[in-house]
Image (cartoon, rainbow, N blue to C red; front, top):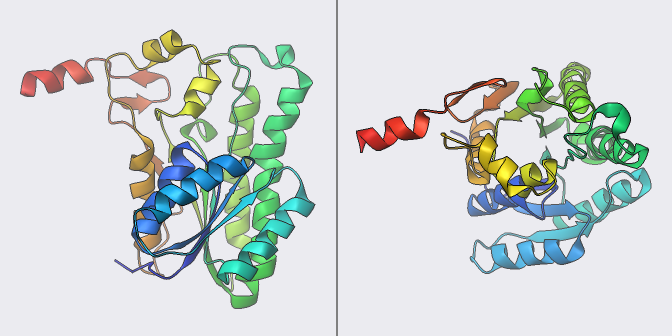
Length: 270
């Protein structure tokens, strides 16, 4: 495995959930961090919690709505000014709003917000970092956090925009990988399955009973599982790329099939 110590990573959606867990895990491995999210207060809280652990890494925070390219580009320039060149981009920020409403029942504002974050935001951040830091040096790693829904259509209402945006991300990642040929730039895709985070609660309008029903009988992923996976993807030798990796609970056999006897079998083993 290759050491990532001393590198610098920019992480979007870094104020909570998977993004926060990735930030903490990378700091543990000696990676400097540029943390991006809309909430400055939450970012400062994440910065403090990491700094308090004494990893000795440099951390900058950038309160930005990634739907605005001018603000994104300024944040990237500021991050480079404070930390140096960006070696790693983790495009983690994403939204799933409106379930279980069907597409035509969604407020257009929610459609715009999901498309603006899940599609434009990822393009804006990738454009700025590749142009400013990766392409001039002909090196870097981009990990786009997609979803298993990018390859399999969800079986329930309210996922049209989210599913389409993740399918877009698959195509964008593949095209970007082709266009960065001629440089040591990796473009990788991580597809989480079911993860217990605020993201999934938001999806079901903070209905805990609906969440409990969805998780019945099996153990889902937690954010730290994805953080460990990111470190694995980043730590492989430069000659190896994990182009796409599905990280799911073992009980999640497919997007439409869960082994809901998983927990009871594990209890019997114990």
